[in-house]
Length: 322
Length: 113
Image (tube, rainbow over all chains, first blue to last red; front, side, top):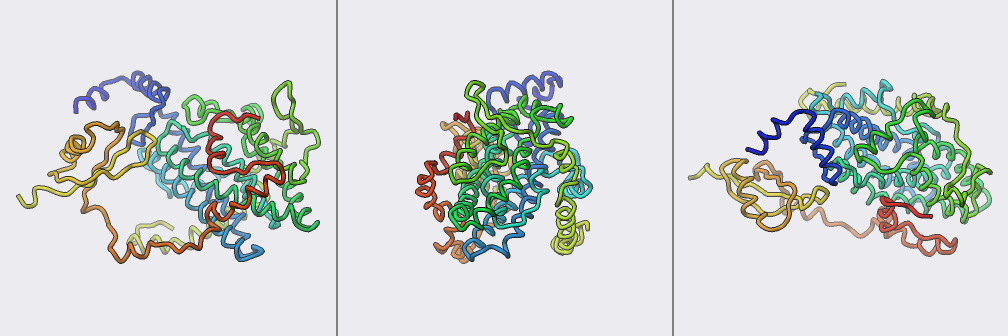
């Protein structure tokens, strides 16, 4: 068609300019549209990491499926773990379509995870030793995830924006599922309250790290400027962290929990939360797969991938790789 | 003319972010013609940002019996927000609002203290 031919005639520079005009006008980019390499590579990294983190994130929670205190809690947490795997599948599909022109598939995503080239979210390297941790993950880790995911609901990349819309709708259930567990503990015996406070203390630094460093100078690298430039998100890491505090700190305090940071307060004149920085060197170690549970969970993922290879093979007529 | 036409199902999006919606079906000799005819048949007035045409023969539809098995029992409220509606009252006791769908989806904009 005529329109196609004239687009093909544009120079790379003109295509780039047209691309920027499109996203600045709020149009969505689709998988087969022209896009700058930097945009494609940034999206692949971001979405593959997001997708694989959903799957790795199911691992600390699924530990609590057989140990949930009641049948209803077991059904609830099973439903939630199932949702997380579903989110992983949605996001991996988005990443796979972006990787297709590079000749890469889900197999490369898995291999990159096992080799350490593809990171998964810092929070999912941490242990979940009590039922309080299970509740806290549902409440605050999901809360942090909701803050970052809602920020990308208007992402310039159409398939990602549509996946996030589905994901965020399900996150409403996750948020309430987590609150239901923690409120029961907060209103329970002293032992239950202590269990909840212990979980909060254990998870606090990981929650602060969840949003990433304030600037690249903290950890050496940060993609936030690029993702903002391309309208994949609108807020910086620090703005998201501040939003998380605004939404969750009053709730944490209202149920009688204490923040494990006695310096934390809202500065009215500066209009922001003042808090103690987590140890960013520890963050770097964690995302290099040197966190407390990194190796164990990667091994679990790799084993299940290998153990299920026969299923893929049986369904594909011996095409699948081990 | 048997074998000339094939049945195509037509789907479209009103905007870049809208869900894909089934419009109707049409007969066409190939994908290109199906796309042109889809525009003429179904998109004469309403805004549209994308159109898909799919050969019906490429779609695995469900049988009546299979569709029957889709009906749900009303016993999954642990999986829906309905099962957690009591939280609204509970949070009020702590002078906090419930995080419902409206509240959570509003977080995509500016968050005020």
